[in-house]
Image (cartoon, rainbow, N blue to C red; front, side, top):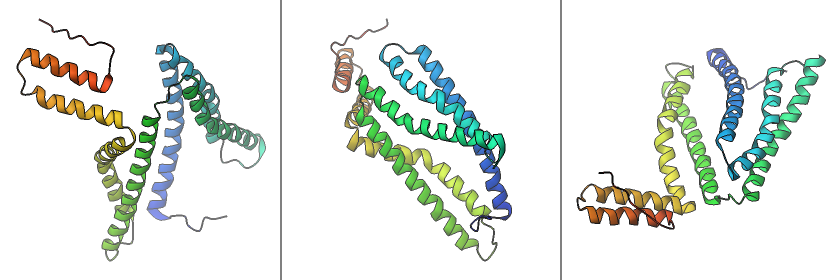
Length: 233
């Protein structure tokens, strides 16, 4: 059945090519993620290694299953179709278990850091929503402006992509800072302490006062049991 909403022409070919590239990138990313887990596991000790065991157990199933499911997609009959259907079921179930494994790893070993998790989640959701809105608005504006010149929307898509790419980092930093101020106050306060200390450090030349400033800057955000300062002569 033909898709009545499918985009044709050069834009359709571009989207088809982008879909093929995306599939290749996803497969590569899955195996790179698995390799990164192996590297982190080899370097980890103690609690972190125990946490990674939960996550790696699920990824070891989800990664290969997802790669096989994507590679075998397309056939509607025969053994390949059966393999594709089975691996899709395994992959989707495994992916659904990933947050469960993460939750067990966090709760079992008391590595909550819930403020950081909440702030990062909210930050990325807000950034994604804003960028999608910008992408759509720019496309509509450019199409309206160039509708009398050309009926193709290739230029609008290209410009929108460039605008979103240029806005990503500055927008992410601004939004994450505001979110941290509300949901991850310890990190926000620590950054303010570091910025304040850096400002005072530029004008301070007295060694005794400098030592006091460094000790205060470390004590406030980190709150260590003891602090010692070593000056290289």
